[in-house]
Amino acid sequence: MYTFLNDSFVPDDKAFLHVSDLSIQRGYGIFDFFRVMDSYPLFIEDYLERLYVSAKEMHLKVPYEPEQLKALIFELIQKNNIPMSAIKVILTGGYSPDGYQLADKANLIMVQKPMNFPAAGFPTEGIKIITHEYLRDKPHVKTINYVVGIWIQNKVLEQKAADVLYHYKGEVSEFPRCNFFMVRKDNTVVTPGENILEGVTRKHVLRLAAKKYKIEIGSVTLNDIVQAKEAFLTSTSKRIVPITQMDETIIGDGKPGKVSKDLYNDLVRLESAERLKGT
Amino acid sequence: MYTFLNDSFVPDDKAFLHVSDLSIQRGYGIFDFFRVMDSYPLFIEDYLERLYVSAKEMHLKVPYEPEQLKALIFELIQKNNIPMSAIKVILTGGYSPDGYQLADKANLIMVQKPMNFPAAGFPTEGIKIITHEYLRDKPHVKTINYVVGIWIQNKVLEQKAADVLYHYKGEVSEFPRCNFFMVRKDNTVVTPGENILEGVTRKHVLRLAAKKYKIEIGSVTLNDIVQAKEAFLTSTSKRIVPITQMDETIIGDGKPGKVSKDLYNDLVRLESAERLKGT
Image (cartoon, rainbow over all chains, first blue to last red):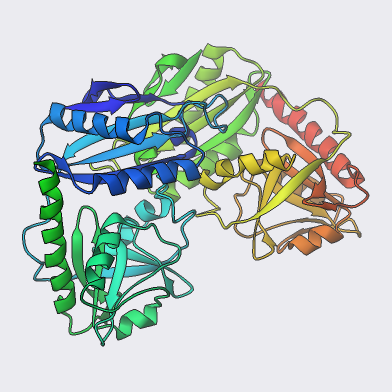
């Protein structure tokens, strides 16, 4: 398999960065991540748009124009030939002259890996999540900083939970790698609007929800979740996953909810339509 | 010159990490940094102690016992023969199987570089600093996360400042890479006690100050600084640097202060005594 590194395709096991790179020295970089379905990168335009926004915000320059980068992604997909997979694009601060200053040139890495897609059909069981008080740095930018998310994994496992929901003084933001949604008793679909990374799946789910339900983008507190009828998370790799327990509280009737399932089915349909772009 | 990488000394330009390393994937790692003076690593015991504490806090295992690591540092110093220099030790999350999970083995990097020591004598001019509202993740641990510190460098330069002081709702913590001190009108030496990385230079300056002045470790607000007689920063590479302007406010009489200078002289003396350990 190949990885694309700056200007060439190299075998996966030959993809290295010098230790002066600012990701290694100072955790400085941005990335994006998308699924490849039947050899087509789903919603590629959305992900590339976000990548360039993240880069700009962090004073990094993507070394290709969007159309060039897209062509390189298609070339990577063709070379590797892994029809069901995921691609991660990382852009780092580059080889820093002094271990702090941004380099003139960012380092670009594109890695493709086989990926088990979420099992077909809406999950019959919901997950348990725990909560943690934490406000991310620059939450609206997809930086590579996951210090807290990885650090807390031990606790997530200890508590037999599947993920951890961040809040700050009770105000809910997001999971380390997923967005949060809840459904009120009147079927309004609600998701936090502040201090979050605007997920591509979140965006599509909101659009789908708006066709059938009332939607609300704004404040969500831990207490709101306790009162909710349904809750779920969205992410590129997981689509929609119902949440039935938060810490010691059972959410709704403790079963995956109807609105969540409805949106899941709509999302799967949207993916199929999107995939046809590649044919 | 050589870099030590995991288990061997490699030429500097051959020190690479595979892109699956968790520092590149997720900015996950810790580090420490100390000066080498006349080929002796100043205050090495302090820095190593902190390195092991940082590693433990972040669930990373240093692949050597402290005495072994110290011996490797002395070997690096001998091999490179750069009498006035600095060494950075980085420990990353290792080669992650999935780009998120910690690897079984951390990656250890030790790089030595020539370093211009601070010019002899206490600075005759103070620096200007700017302020920025920001609360670091896990401030008490020396993680490699400097996303905000590097991101804001442009603004520091635009404002013709030398550094940026973090505060949260007016409560001062630290600089990205330095600790903050101020001197009250009654000559009490004050430094923030919460949400900071406990610098080794800070520790020594506090001990030196306690011999001659009243010291206070606790809350410092931006308004306290406006009222202060003197202010300075401490860091491994900079020793003590007087601060005479914060944003648009002149501190004290706008000149480097007497207490700051006194502590600077004491620190230089302490360094000389410490250096003799190497003879």
